[in-house]
Amino acid sequence: MSINIRLASIGDASRLAKWMNETDGDPYDWTVTKIELYVLNNFVLIAEDTKKDNQIVGRLFFQPTEQPLLGVGEVQGVVIDNKYRGRGIGKSLLDRAIQESDTYFKRWGIDNFRLFLYTRSSNEPAKTLYKGFGFRENSLVGKMFRKDQSDELLMSRGF
Ligand SMILES: CC(C)(COP(=O)(O)OP(=O)(O)OC[C@H]1O[C@@H](n2cnc3c(N)ncnc32)[C@H](O)[C@@H]1OP(=O)(O)O)[C@@H](O)C(=O)NCCC(=O)NCCS
Image 1 (cartoon, rainbow, N blue to C red):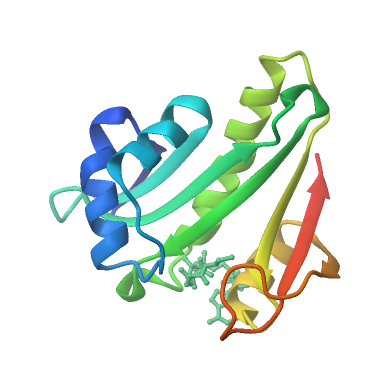
Image 2 (cartoon, protein in one colour):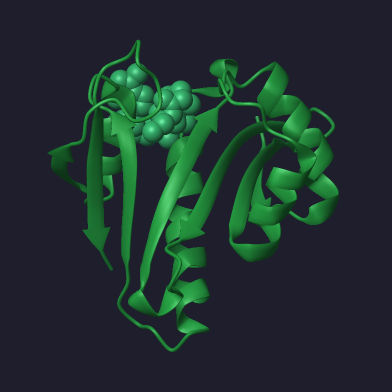
C-alpha cells in the first residue's frame, strides 16, 4: 500500500463528489459546487492509493470560522474508505490538516490557533484518533446532524 496525502484542487471536485456520494457513507448530498467552495475558501485533503490509479481512499475538510482573525477552525468529515481503515491514514490526514491550518492562519498573521470538531459520542475510533492528537472532550451538544444516532461531542485543542 502506498498512500499519498495532498491538498485537493478544483480539478478533484468531481471525482471527490462521486466518491463521497457513492462510497464513503456520508449521508449528505455532496455537489461538485459545494466541494469547489471548500477547496477555494478553506482546504480539503485527500488520501490516494498510488498503486491503484490514485483512487481516493480518504478525505478531510477544514473550515475556519467566519472571522479568520479569531484563529479558530473546524476539522470536518474525516473519512477513510472501509478497506483502508486502521493503517494510519486517518492519523496522516489529521497531522497534515494541523500543518495546513498553521499555514492558513499564519497568512492572517495568527500564530496560535484552535481547532474544534464534532464527532458522535459513540464513535470510539474517531475519539481515540482525536485524543491521540491532544484534542479534549469539551461538551455533549445533542443530536446535530442525525436524529437516529448518539449525541455529538465537541472536541477541541489549541496549537
Ligand atoms: C475514524 C477514522 C477516520 C480513523 O481512520 P483510520 O485511518 O482508520 O485511523 P488510523 O489507522 O490512522 O488510526 C489512528 C488512531 O485512531 C485510533 N483507532 C483507529 N481505529 C480504531 C478502532 N477501530 N478502535 C479504536 N481506536 C481506533 C487508534 O488510536 C489509532 O492509533 P494507533 O493505531 O496508534 O493506536 C475511520 O475509522 C473512519 O473513516 N471512520 C468512519 C467515518 C468516521 O466516523 N469519521 C469520523 C467523523 S468525526
